[in-house]
Length: 364
Ligand code: M6R
Image (cartoon, rainbow, N blue to C red; front, side, top):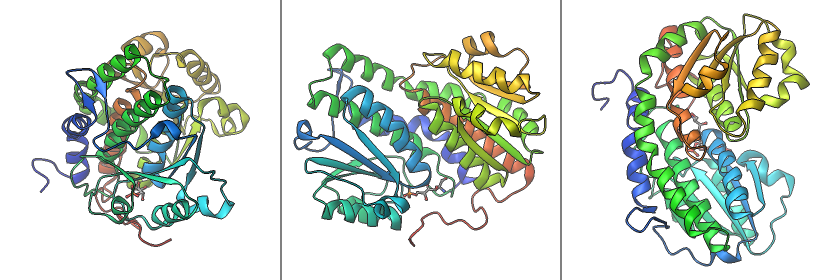
């Protein structure tokens, strides 16, 4: 049931404040300001390395999580798409944790990778939205997302719930490794708990984003740029556009632009820059200026401070509320989802059932 919404995708985008809050409830103890897991955590202190494997949007959630595992827990992370993982003879030493992320829990490549990691003696953790799925059943550590059924082929609410779980998991691992002070743990709880309200504030920009979509809909190619955890978000933004609006879109690490793709810049290629205020802002903005200096048409997604500082001269801006960098990937998912959605609607494509795609890819 789509409720009052025209498409399942839009309904699912709008559900995010609620389902992220629902998911966080299993991982945050607000009263004593603790991050915990809803399952026995085994002995995470023995984990020496984390191998993250997934496909599509779930892979981009894993890419964001890599920053968190490394930053909080100081554990080395290996990351790959499931369809490549097994074919490069990955080295998995004893004591390793292999983490699989999947909305459906049935994606054939991810499931095959999970079985490969199991055969290599890894502890298997699964972040999954369907508790009865194959991956959930084969997990040693099942970390559920509580997004509810996701019907739209384009993944939206599953992604933000995955990020919420992965942030909590990274904090748990950090604590098990003796690397999380009480103060840091309290701060993480506080920031994550702010995510639902910030998601609501991002949703309130829907009409403004619909306007911006009119500038993107006529394009044949689009570039998405981001740095740090905004780099996987750029990849996710480009994937959403490709999937449902059939516009050729590429996500790039902002700093890689000048190593090639900058040659593509002209005023027919909108360049969408994801740059929340924070430690990486200045660097990303200077990459954005390189694009502008070559006649590029920039759409800047930032917060009010960021837009005030760097928005002049952009073709369009989207100003989100200012959020802590930890939850920025969760909150910035909303504008990229809505942008793809409105572009698709303006182009008249089948938003919920895009051509050539299946909700769950059960062949390798
Ligand atoms: O069910 P999964 O999370 O394992 O699915 C992985 C991908 O097939 C999926 O994320 C796909 O890329 C989506 N259509 C993206 O919107």
